[in-house]
Image (tube, rainbow, N blue to C red; front, side, top):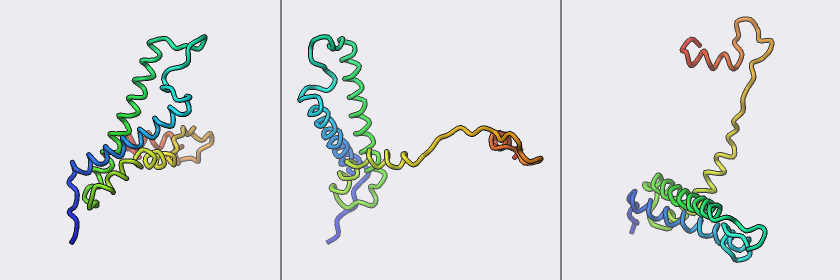
Amino acid sequence: MQAEILGVWQAALWGLAGGGAAALVSLSAAVKAAGYRWPWRRRGGAGQLRAEEVRERFWARLFVLATSLLLGAGVAAAAHGQMTGPWPAFLLGVGAEASVRGLLAGVEVSVRKPEEAAAPGVPAVAEDATAVEKGTG
């Protein structure tokens, strides 16, 4: 008996659950690292945070959670046609953030300076990009 392929919404929901699981594991590690306190709060004393700093850290953590959830749902939904159950969708949701981070780690963005002594008739790199944009290259 062959299992049915997951629909896009089913896969997205399982990916959402996986993204949430990954975010909770991350939050759990942050709580442990902060001495079993909320990571956006500090102990009282000279290093005490102002109320607006606490809110800012809270909203930043909430943004990270939402990003993890949406990324997990999106990755699982994108691969829904290749899944035959909830477990693969859940695992895609768990690993979505790390997978995308790994893919983007290989992307290098750098600014190239035009060559000082370009050969006659051969545009420098920056000039070549401009020529392509204008449709002359």
